[in-house]
Structures are given as C-alpha cells and as structure tokens.
Length: 296
Image 1 (cartoon, helix red, strand yellow):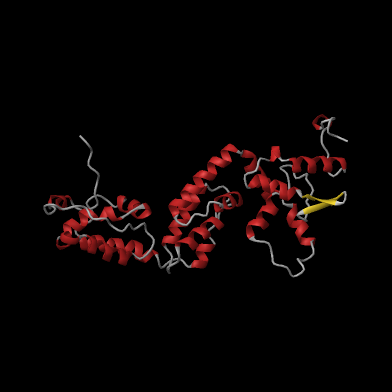
Image 2 (tube, rainbow, N blue to C red; image 1 turned 90 degrees about the horizontal axis):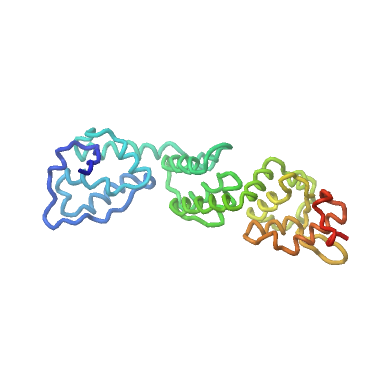
C-alpha cells in the first residue's frame, strides 16, 4: 500500500469531496519570489467552482507551489494548519515578511565563499533574493548571481546566458561536466587566482589613450590566461607580438582559443609561439622536452 504523504492541514479537510466533473486547475507557480499576496489572489481565482469551500483551497494549495516555496510547505508540521485562513496567515507571515529584510545592494554583496560548493551558493543567493524588499527583474537577478560566483564558475556559466533559475542550474551542470572532461581548465583558473602577474603588469601599463575599456569578459579572460599553472609564461600586454617584421598572436589570444572551445594541441599558431619563445630564451624547457627536429 502506498504511504500517504504527511500534510500540514488537519486530516478532516481531506474528507471534503470535490464537485462532480472537477478537473485540477493549472495554477500559476509560486517559488518564493515575487508577491506572496498577489499569488494568493491568483490561486483563489484559479480555483473556480471550488472557491466557495475553504477546505478545497487547502487541498489544492500545494499544487501552486514550487522550488523553495514547496520545500517550505513540506516542512510545516503535520496537522498544524486548522483552516484556509490560518494557512494564508502563515504563508504571508513567511513570504511577505521575508521580502522586507534585504536590499538590492546587500544582494549584490552575496558572493560564493572560497570553499563553498556552487550549488550551496546558488541556494544561499536564492534564499537572499526571496527576502528582497523590492521587485527586481529575474534576468538581472540571475546576472547578479553569476557575477557573485568564483571566477572559474562565473566565466563559464555566463557563456550559457541563463535567464531563469532553472536555466542557471542547467548551465552549472553543463559547466561541471566541462570541468570534469578538461580539468586543466580548472587548474588554469585556480593558478590564475593564486598568482596573477597581470595585475602587476596592468598597474604599470600606460592608460588606453582615452579609448574604450575592455569588456568584462575580455578583461577577465586576459587576466586568467596570462600565466601557466607554474606561472612561467611571460605576460604579454599586446594582443599581437611584433617579430621578424610581422605580427604574431600573443599567448593570451592563443590560450583564449582553448577557453572558447578550440583545441590548443592542434593550434599551429600556438606551436609557433612556443617555439619562438624557446628560441628567444623567454621560457626555458627541459632538454628532454625539446624536439630536435623542430628546434633551430
């Protein structure tokens, strides 16, 4: 026999029967964000012919909840709700009151902690968003959440351009798989965070002659790929190097190709850059690592 789910309202409400030929309405789903009072109004209107019986409100209410709001509903003590009026009071006390606690500035300061799992951070950010004192476009909320992630998550997840929380979860899952398939990308990010000579280079670099600053994605990519895991590749500020009367792609540009999906091992330009750097004594390789057929 299938075990019956525990319900927060008193058991006798389940004895109240629905009308003949009743079909479950398609409810607007409330996930804990948005206006709780407005959701209650939508819910009661959607109940149609059952709106005259408060017990039937109670029986249908869980079908209008999703995500954190449904999780909250499931945690209510069994039999703790005596009536529909009681349920509305408890619901508003939790979700309306919560939205008075947080400002947009405070939400923008919610960042992923150093050792915090990405999923835990998203839950914490979303719970903070649920306490927001004013309305905010969901796309802006998602962008803020992505911006607060650690750098290796933020740059990769942003490429998926999620607009809602479900798309954000999918983007994170996809990024996890990418990191598992290419752990060297994660290592590049980690070492770039621990040792970032680009910051020192940029501190002494002349201004951009009044030009437009780099877009955030380009600036971040330059900062990330300015060093190898050992921090031994020299930092090159220009996008192209001048050598032998012609321009060559810089290492930042070449490594950025790996970042956007190109296979660096098959990149002829990268191999040429590496060989030129060895020839010019700008980097040192172990003798066993040098191919005598290619080394001039």
